[in-house]
Length: 305
Image (cartoon, rainbow, N blue to C red):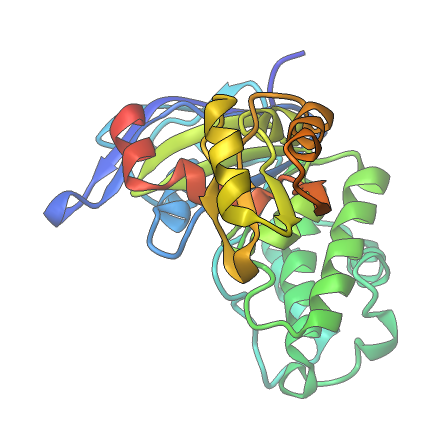
């Protein structure tokens, strides 16, 4: 199946070397693609390039099978987007905000009510937007992007500023949206935990370069979990482990931490055989956060460059 979005060697440079460099994005149809990176990594620049709001210095963008070319809007016909903060008329109510865009797009009047129900704002459609919470404004902004029934939706940091309850609500809403509307979601964020709980695929961007792209499972496979152990003789345990070919390090609370070469059961057996009492022995789960910092560490940047 053809990807919903892909780019080839997409580049845009700014003064000082900032920008994005030779991006080869590939977003499968029907996926929730988490575009992950710290602030300033180039996520918003990338989205602007994908929407034709910036011209690339080099490279290609393909959206739902159509190549994006200057002066041609056909590739964007089935694409919806929310870049940074939604552009809303605060003095108008929610319905009127949607109505303005609906008329510009020449859509049927019934579409406004459909979108209000889809984003959960039908009961508040009569209220002025200045009275809306931040989460409601984000939903209305997404509603604007949904008016044209897109098959590909691009959202730039939609969770910015939301409290934990609002973030959880947005996550649930986006998951249901993809499942019920049958669209592909490209979601940029610096919130590692949110991407881990929502996305099926991940791209990690750092300093304008793509450090990783694939499924969450593939990302986790890149790192072996660390083994943490606590015992009654840490110094002696370190000596035993080094002799066994391991590379342990002393961690917080006099515990030992290592990326094991031997199975955990074998490590435990060797320590006990040397008269060392083991109180705790456990593999740490690999989190997206730990992998992100591994991918964006200076050494990783040099390897990927």
